[in-house]
Length: 349
Ligand code: SAH
Image (cartoon, rainbow, N blue to C red; front, side):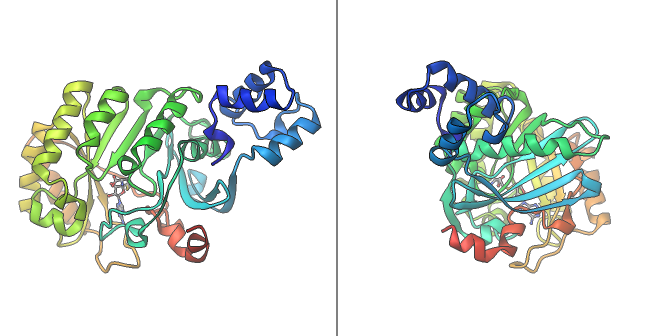
């Protein structure tokens, strides 16, 4: 837990119990969320009050490691939240936008074979405040992005560690803070899921403007069961129904994420099976060349295989992009940096 877990009412209650006027809490709250300020920077408060805030309501965001790549346009940080959970947050600057990629859990229970976070198992759910605090960190770090990119966070994606829809309550709580107190537009926020089917319509109901990305990775149940064990719980037919329900409620275009894995899910046959699924769901397909992880021997698909896969999809009329892979040299694949810091991660269990 961090101060970011308190809403304005709870913060007011605390400060009033210390003998402060209610407007002081509004002052602190606005600076925490709108200015991403630390207590040190709240120079309009007395030193005594700043000290008490620091001691009793700590921000709870400690940077353990920070790396940059792509000439400073990618920044990856290992954060310790609430004095316990160690997670990764990534900031990516592009010409027209700057995206914060946040974690929803430390570790993950979904156990996808190719994913570094999946290989470490689930340690903890993050609280709503701990998820939102990562966006606060990213907003501060955005000032250090190169001048060729916006120096403020325009987009947030839930594509860091963990499965956001397995931590539904806190993910929804974080969405409320990010789109509410932080003032980031719902349409600029995307939740990425492995396909927790029952939670997808609930996301649409609660946040009809928030985007949805589904990590499909395979277009038949046998192949998908092997890569994504959660497919045994929510097989492709059920998952597609859930995405349909989401589309009906939101009238938005979902994304399909697909890691391109050499001789695993990159055949013509997979592309031919994916095309009708993507067309029916009116989905945009994002292909991501696999980022190899220590716990799994597979390699990314070679460029000519990716080109052939793209051609089949395009010929069928599917909107497809090959995602540029950011920050390979800084272990920016989901979970890789914390694997490297296993010792730290283990202590946070
Ligand atoms: N659990 C959520 C969000 C975290 S993963 C989900 O599954 O969508 C974010 C994205 O990175 C997912 O599409 C995931 O499949 C992909 N990913 C994970 N490990 C990867 C790797 N080693 N190489 C390429 N993409 C990977």
